Amino acid sequence: MKKICFVWTLLVICFLPFAVSEASMGRNTILFVPLDNRPVCLDYAVETMKAAGWNVETPPLEYIAGNDHSGDPDKLYEWLAERSAAANAIIVSSDALIYGGLVDSRTHHLPQEVLAERAERLLNLKTLGGDPLIYVFTTIMRSPKASSAPVEPAYYAEWGQKLFRLGALEDKLDLKEISRKERRELAGLQTEIPQAVQEDRAQRRSLNIATTELLLHGVESGNFDYLLIGRDDTAPYSQAHKEARKMDILVRELPKEKIRFFSGADQLGLLLLSRAASRVSYEIPMIYVDFADGKGGATIPTYEDDPIAFSASEHIHAAGGWPTAKLARADLVLAVNTPFDGVTLEASSPTNDGVLTKHTEKFAADIKSYLKQGKPVAVADVAYGNGADNALVKELFQEQLAEKLAAYGGWNTAGNTLGFALAQGLLAKKMDTAERLYLLDVRYLDDWAYQANVRNKTYVELIWPNYWPNSGLNTQQVQEAEAVITKDILEIAKPVLGERAKDYNFILPWQRMFEVEVSKK
Image (cartoon, rainbow, N blue to C red; front, side):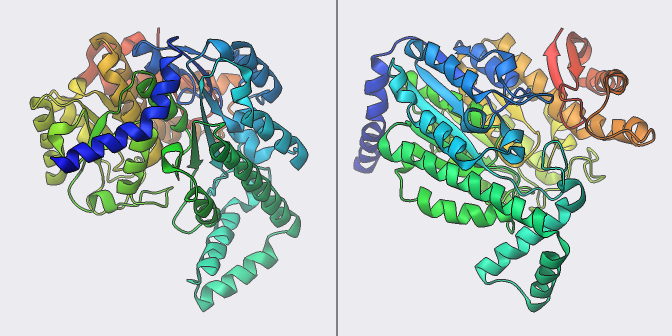
């Protein structure tokens, strides 16, 4: 009993500065500057908060980066300055305020002095007035295995895969884990890849790291109440992993109650929105984590470089919660669906055939048990990358569990899924049933119907046969693709969602196949 009292006393001490600051505000308004205008970064995040009763204000769309324009850091800062005094909290993407957006952080041609000036301006947000909480999220540059313009510098179209391999081998060399054969391969790549390409890559990454290090001063000085650093698209051996290792040394010197550093990018905004909601409401929700059988928490998902158990714990802290090993104390159960063998294949893989396995059946049964005990459950479905586990979703609907969940996520990387499911799950208690079901519908239609099924079907039946690009579709191509996508989503969703699937629109907001936007008609 003494141990429990000590822990709770420690928690109160850790979070007392937040409570004192927030008690003087009482305004219930959050200013939010997202990475860009993709649905997961902007609309879905804001809809989640509004469903939970929060007034979230965002800048005019023309200031926010989109598929056809860069964001405007100066206008974004001016917008914040005009409204700061009326806000409980300010949640800001440093990529937006410094570079213009996530894509701009990889493709810009800004000199170091401009980046430093904008970072310094970000450090001074506290001086704008009103004493709001200042939460900042930033990303270190990703190490994509394959990508191209416009989301990367143009040379990635030709050299993307070899640049990834170069980074992986350089990481191994730095770790002293490289073989003789790999040393020869590294030397060959260093000769083969044009020197100008290697120099541009090195300079961009160096600028990104230097700018991120400037932001660390915001934690040291107290100008930031919280800093969240994300690693976008990485791997156990990669350039991003090498840089993260060095960054982690700096992060470890800072107070953990004010900074976290883990895989992912697109979920960071909603995580900090959730954190702000908890802090302003004087809450520290307790979260119990359960992994599917098999490798479970030891799984290192594709596109990431940490075990999922570590990632889950870090996400919980970042979202304003606290992990608990006692189910009875939990305010939320985070149920994480991992692959039995620990290998996260793509959702488009033939193995994602919807056939129920014993370990998936048990995972669904565990969810049912938690719900029967009155525990809210958020499901992070990370068994596959870039889409849901068809067998799990089928079983959730079959057992009439799908609509009882506090939240569900199964999109993109494991970190993206984990963060979204956790944040929506924590906020669900403030939502009415209709709002919660709406957010669930969006996730099932997006993560399951589209990403795990219809996207690849559209590639096979429309995009590839017509030699269309995966991104940069023209207006006519977008319209034809959206018509096919809508038809196929409605067809696959009708058996489980019934006629209400017809209440939604499905569009390709960035004129590419990677993401669909699901919205009410």
